[in-house]
Length: 394
Image (cartoon, rainbow, N blue to C red; front, side):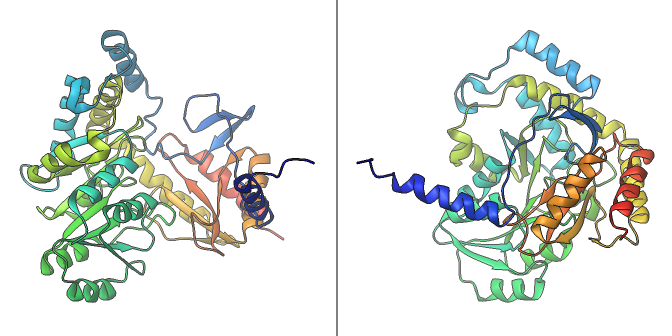
């Protein structure tokens, strides 16, 4: 008699079959070239509209050279957490530069993390607890939601951009501390949160506004400081998180806020205290990347021109292009399999534009998440639009 199959494995296999039948199977493509506008993936060279390397810094010669030099002089591993022996001089210098660029209030400081996910978990679990409340936009990134749940605070979600409902929720709350948590640029729609209005609500209800600027930092604002600079906002009520593996081209994340908040994260946030520091060479590379973000605004100007160009060329397509002033250009197809088929057809024509399906986006709104970067040319954007037009013609 054959042994009975393990319940967990049997259940997981059944769930996998249901996902595949619903068009929700996922697999990883293998890239063997540096990140860039053109990449080699699964043995093919394609024009890639699949990356968050918005400024084209992931393979920039100055950034690469800084990483190589740092590896040769400082090694490759941090060896310990920041609070033990892992905090290198390059980490310290990077945090000073980030505070100067993206600090949300006078005297702000910054602290770095290995990932944006860890940074948001740290913010919410260190600043909120059982007697507190977190109010979150329904389209927030998963890490903001997970941070609120781990904090064990009361967790209230409001419909995307619904400030009237949020106002009522805040007014009805008797929590000790109130935190409003929002993406600054929503990663699958590309739209901006109404940060000025959210900050006004935070002031009216004595709340703190936690802003995940993963997709705005480096891209928005005259200096590339992000969405707060774009709106001209400054307040001690603001806590901003920015990632360093997207527009900055390397890896990691930072939080910038009032010094009392930064000290609290450094001294009490479990995702910081109990994590080995990122390799110092990454901090050295990021210092080079920040110099480019600060000193080469032409990259952002070219990126904005590409965004405008694609919007013009995409008019008349049978799919809905969501209005987005950012490099994230979502083309909503609807059906899961139809989105996969469109992505596959573009792949055959030499373009990589991945299909995004539930649960990443709501059911019935599967899409291509087309991302533009400063490394793209007008000709490449025109070619993508032409291919989409050809595929959309009956």
